[in-house]
Length: 258
Image (cartoon, rainbow, N blue to C red; front, side, top):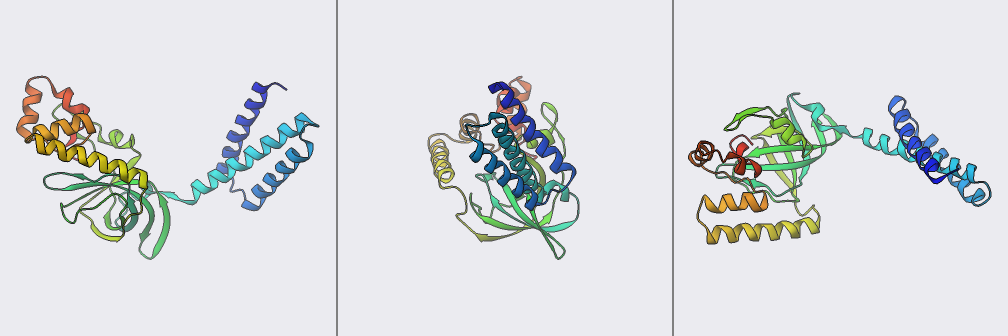
């Protein structure tokens, strides 16, 4: 049996494990039994029977694939609750809040959702639009009360903008506008990300010190990907001069709709 054949069988075992787990809910006890059997075959027959050892690895991959699918399936996707009325969502601020002159836009990674008296573990991101204060930080654990909505496309200076696909690139399929928010705790995020965000914020403050608006916002957008808003007049000027593609790269084409 060649290495390429073994690799093929392992890939097929993973695919088959996902496929079977998607059709029937395999009990964890059975998956655990397959895993133990595979480990025994590999350890006992290693160097003695290559085909049986290869079978053991295939069973091992099969059981792990089934387990991974069950773990994913155990948490429901947040977007399933879009347009289902008022609910409570608990999740962590997973990125630097995007602060505009009149609002904040926050990306939140969901952990659980409460509808009525029923609490469900959940996964997925939501884009939350709220007022300027209080200011939220990366790593804040929030309790959000509001209505989940499906993102809607809109018209921009460059034409119809596919807002749904734009957000989907960041794994965002739900939005909430002006909810009630309670901060449950802080400092829940990654230390590494927090350090990098701190460096980014220092660059932004430097731009604000050395350049007036809208130049500082424009430079922050081009260099750091920030979407602090340009004025409507300046946006129209870009459109008239045929240079809208410059600001489109940094996300300004959706500034008023995020």
